[in-house]
Length: 370
Image (cartoon, rainbow, N blue to C red; front, side, top):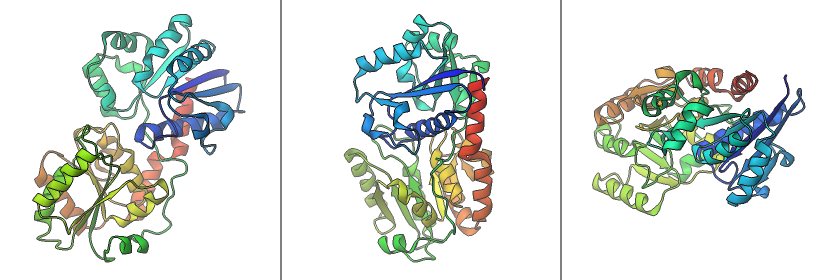
């Protein structure tokens, strides 16, 4: 391995649990594991985490520094460390100002920016656009995201590398695919009762996840599956929770839908196994890590065909792709998946063969060393 000094800048890595933070932890684990293999040094600076937030499963404390929102100190130390680095990797476009300063003082430093999805599918300030076009390599989490960057910001295709997301290295794979008894009891379900499962943030600011259309499909599905139950899980803000609850009441689905709220990481595998189908017909998904987590648990998936979900579902090999704006297509896909059971072991093996952390590490090493 040739000598490399790498600085990884993030907004949050350990204090939040969203998709971007999961990616950050996976990257941190790879870079941390590379320590001691050849002449490579690595530091991770997190703007909003504190030093005590670090999880040493992913990287040792000595490679990490948290700034608890102190932007000035973060900027100064990032500049000093960045100009001494071969490569500076940004977890988010909102950190681009710091990269611009580093590039100003150290033109030879390579700047890399992760492109996850909607944070870059919109108009951005002119200076950011020019800097991305002229001075940055992009690591896009899906082919769809890459195509959007070319279309919206006129980025050169050869400046974009596709690095699909992966399973967390500590994600617990189920040893059997049975529905967990304690969750059946918690939600008063029977073992043969068909269960739909969605896991996403319920936000009044992000209304593109598609659970409204899943709810609207249920009245028709009840004709064939009268005891169907839908578990919609994820942290919800007050406005969105009230709106969704009103829709549930309007559709007369109170006995068929549970808003499960936030689910801890250690419970995720059990919830995926509880579901007969994982469904998230999103219209603006950059990738969709939850799809590969569900598939790794042997759970059939349904996702939208107009965004990055297609990458996560291997263009239909790992799940059903439908038009997320058409309730009829969602209804038919659910009906098909509940009526024709998939082999959970085959789904799991296919998922792992494409999205394991080990495979991700190999791809990331090649990008770093190229």
